[in-house]
Image (cartoon, rainbow, N blue to C red; front, side):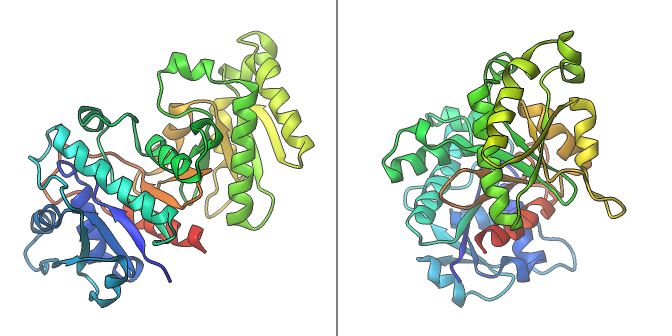
Length: 342
């Protein structure tokens, strides 16, 4: 089985800490995984999580993904990247921290695209630090999209991707990702909604092994209330759904955004009506999943020719270096990546 690459994330944030905790607390799940980044940064993180009665987490430098087989459980294998910036001050935005995070992602993405690793799990990075480092992309999703397009020799527009946030209770996929709300509303076009439906259908068909039941959220309050609160549902979203159904997709809606997520939520006592909800913009889709529990949510990039998952939280600069960050979401991201890799 090929290994999974875990990027270290922004070295000024909690990424390295939760990576070290995951190797310490979930050795079975982390078997066959290794970290892409800087050895000194991971050793500092391992020191930050030391507590009385809890053994120190050793950090071992490796030179190739296959070396992970020689590393014992509860030891963090780190593939040292040449020239990567080392440890940065906790909780501070810096170009060096942004560059370290970006370098880790680029190396892991290229290794996955070449088939050298099964997939990648990305620890949180900071978008302001990424920008300070001169990276032309606002986050993981866009950076990975660009790497995949370059690898396949196609234009960026020919590598459409979408963000899915998933937990054991709810899945949501976003029509648009990181842009202003004004721009996000403008991005609700028939083509973008249809593309989102097709990407979601293809991804969940593979992972579920059956045709997914897809719910579509409206853009406006009450899904427009028959045009009283806006016409996008009838004029833009519905035509995309008709085109999707013509291609065999099981699509329903558009539904009122304030109720569709509750209808789709699965609990131990009741299965949700739908497998996934298509949300029209970033916060519409992310707030419901995060409200149900950030520790359970996993970010999955759909549409890429590689597997990429990530914990459903950010760099948490306010608690970085204190050793109190929760690694649960990262561990769930590793489990999700394993499942998607087959």
